[in-house]
Amino acid sequence: MKFTRLIAIAVMAACVQLSNAQKIKGSDTVLPVSQEAAETYMNQHAGARVTVTGGGSGVGISALLDGTTDIAMASRSIKFSERMKLKKSGKQLREAVVAYDALAVVVNPGNPVTNLTRQQLEDIFRGKITNWSQVRDAVTGKRGEDLKIIVYSRETSSGTYEFFKTSVLHEKNYMAGVLSMPATGAVIQSVSQTRGAIGYVGMAYVNKRVKAIKVSYDGKRFVYPSMATGRDHTYPIIRELYYYYTADKDNVVKPFINYLLSDAGQRIVMKSGYVPVR
Image 1 (tube, rainbow, N blue to C red):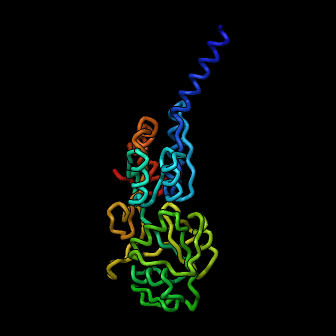
Image 2: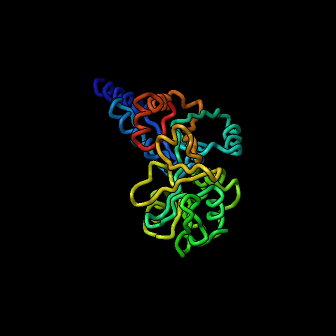
Image 3: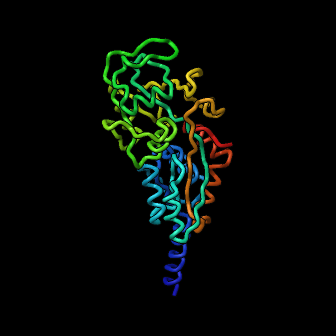
């Protein structure tokens, strides 16, 4: 009888632990802050288990649709078609904006070009400009080197890919020869090793191996991506970073989401290199 009681207690304890477990999947942009927040949250809440994996916004949202993740991380807003799929399943969608990101355009540190307009970026990423010698720095007036432009992008499942296409290319298609990278880290590595390269990454990924470009949408004011310019939205390529989940998982996911949106959680957002929402 005592042995049976011990088994029952062990099973109940396991069920409690499982009820506190949650899976978070999706955007590589949101990945660093989610990992840092999950680690801190688990250290402060005994029995809590949070697993965080990347793969891209589209991958995370697909996992939410098929029920294999509790939270989908996304660096773009959910599409109408994705909303409809979820609605057909009878589940109610929930959305939380957990941070802002200044999407940085990066080149190799050896590239002398420092300032680019949105139109120049569109022409480069659409293949209309193919050599840096065709690029005139709008501030210094100097042209780039006689060097082929190598364009790096994220894969089509990436929310960053979608956002850049909307915000910078104005929904026009990328050039046919764009090199699609499976993760943001791969973009950084490729740009750092290729003198003629250009790409785009979340602000938190910018380091000394690459050079972030000042960008202007009006051709007059060129702004560098930073915490300050992201916070006051003077940098033009700003986006919201999302958590998506379903109403039936409220009890499972809300404690962690509330933590991330708290003062302590938003300090983690800043520490990770993103702009807090409050």
